[in-house]
Image 1 (cartoon, rainbow, N blue to C red):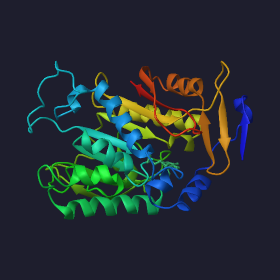
Image 2 (tube, rainbow, N blue to C red):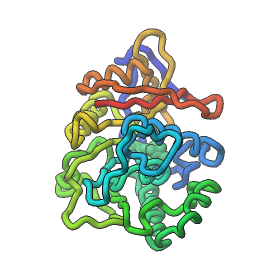
Image 3 (tube, protein in one colour):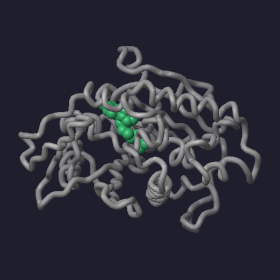
Length: 306
Ligand code: SAH
């Protein structure tokens, strides 16, 4: 059951504890984080859509020959160049990290509050580490085609890439200074897999912050505050982005928000999202509807913000 309203003052705010309680009752799997859509075409279509969106924004991220890599992009930077860093928030079992971000970035920080989800992400990361380097031309890509959920994570077994696991809510997490949250007891570091830097890199900011299917857990003030903290954590304001990929409820010319009692979350309309972006001082530089999802779902849109 959903209580809906076009008057924002009558829509309740999400209750963080209620939301977490709901997610704790869901299986720690793609099916669990995707509300029963984990086994069909959705995960693959979703991951490819996000990868293409990111490569459109940052063509230099694409380091393999590809039909979507423009010809006028300089060759991939040498290994000595600065490592790219990305933040995956409300990350669930690490689906976006493994199927999107490790294909494009060097270092991922994964933030998720629900114990069993982040434990599953850590388990997959450690299993990828033990799996060692993938044999050239075999293994990872074939396993990934068959079942992305079972494939080893790219770049972890050979130590080229890394994932750091942080247990925290979005309300408590500060992307610019994760270590401050740890010191204050608001965030817990559960470990790191893959590449280990010579110097701690936790507070060195991000090239991209990715938020998918989790921002509904925040009230408008929490959302705007989180966007502001995320913006402050972008290393290069001109080449860095906050990516939002979320459901959209319908609207009739005005911002609209729907409260979902089952997980105590908000579904926002396009204009409601844009209102929150503007309030946080963010500009929409690119936006795109995700095509190819099964019928009957909310439309899903990707926004790139600066
Ligand atoms: N982004 C992942 C998971 C989506 S499911 C993916 O696309 O696969 C929604 C996720 O939001 C769950 O992992 C849930 O635990 C998380 N979540 C719920 N409340 C949250 C909060 N207050 N802060 C951060 N994450 C939250």
